[in-house]
Length: 273
Image (tube, rainbow, N blue to C red; front, side):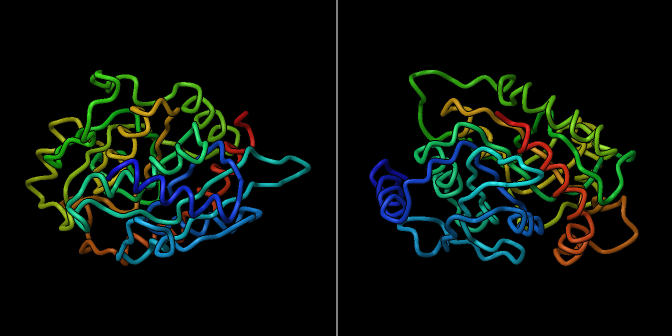
C-alpha cells in the first residue's frame, strides 16, 4: 500500500461527498445489519473504490456507509461504517487489510471501534455474549505494522482508549447487557483451531480467538486514533462446543445477537462527543 493508492481512493470518495466522518466502525461477520440503524448519506460498494480490497467471505457485504444515527432528538457524530472486512488469509498482504483504516483516517475519522465474531475460549463465556477486548495476542506470525511510524515503535499497552472503554461498559450496564471482558487472540486462519490448539491458547491467556481485528487496531493506534474493540462470542471453540464449527453457525448466532449488539452500539455512539 502506498500513499498514492490511498490518495486515489480518497479522491474518488471526495468527488462524491465532502462528508467528514469522526468515527469509523468496522462491522465483523454477521454484524453488518447494524448499518440499518444509520440515516445514510451515501453508500458505496468497496469494489467501486480504486485500490480498495474486496473480500469473499459470506457475511461481509463489502460496503462503506456514510451517515449518522438519529434517535429521540439526538444525532450522533458523523459515521463511516465498514460493512465487513477483508481477512489476511484472503490476500496475504497486511497493507491490504489495513487499507480501510488508513482511508478512514484520511477522510477525517479519529475514532475507531472494531468488531468481530470470535470463538469463545474462556469456559465462563457463552455463545451470543459480547466481549470488550482488553488486550490481544498476535499469533498470526505477521507484524500488523509494515512501516515505521515517526521512527517509533508503538506501545501495545496504549492500544485501547480508556474513555471509549468506559463508555462501552457504562452503556452495557444501563442496557443490562452482560458484557464480558478479555484477551483476543489473532490467528492466521482460515481453518478453525484444533482442540489441542485451544487448550494451548487458554494456557497463554486467550479468552477468545479469531482471524481479524488486530491489524486494524495496531494501524489505527499508529495513526493516533482512539480505539476500542468488541468481539461477539459467536461460538465456543473446538473442544468446548457440542456442535461442529462452521461459518453458518457464526452468522446464525450473530443474527440472534443483532438486537443487543445494535442497542449497545447505538447507545455508545450517541454518547461519543
